[in-house]
Image (tube, rainbow, N blue to C red; front, side, top):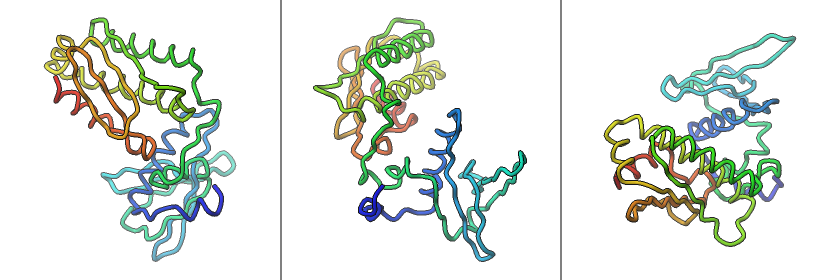
Length: 229
């Protein structure tokens, strides 16, 4: 991010910032060498700093920590006591703070090749078929010359569809309706989030205007699918 890009950042509420930090932390903790965001919280008593570890919105508590001489230094911070949040080590995630104004550029190593993408779809199809106990097809309508960003998000979309169907199948009635009525799922990227049923096929459109932030959540996607069953 350069200086001009920084000037495009919008004002976010503290809870929005914490939710974004949680998203970043959830991604980084899965990596071999996690690059966790560093934060400083200010309140009337002073400032505390550390690596962001977890945020529980229900408990209204943030867990931050440091690592010194192979020992953990943990601090549990009440959300109510935070008056200021300062961020470091988030250069790879500034797009999440920009509300779509700063474009996301995926790391080249995270962009699936055509072969990798086909394998991802096949893996998702097999997983869904096992859950539903029937054959089903999944197709991605890439359009002409999809960008690297679209390829990256397509991989995330496949996983989202798989997880959504898996959760939906936990409800016996919803699973029966899906098994009896659906044989195929197609998805694409569009200006609106939509789920439409055409005969025995679902078409799911994902809105990427603000990156993954503007895409339907798993719960929202499940609700839209169930409305059409």
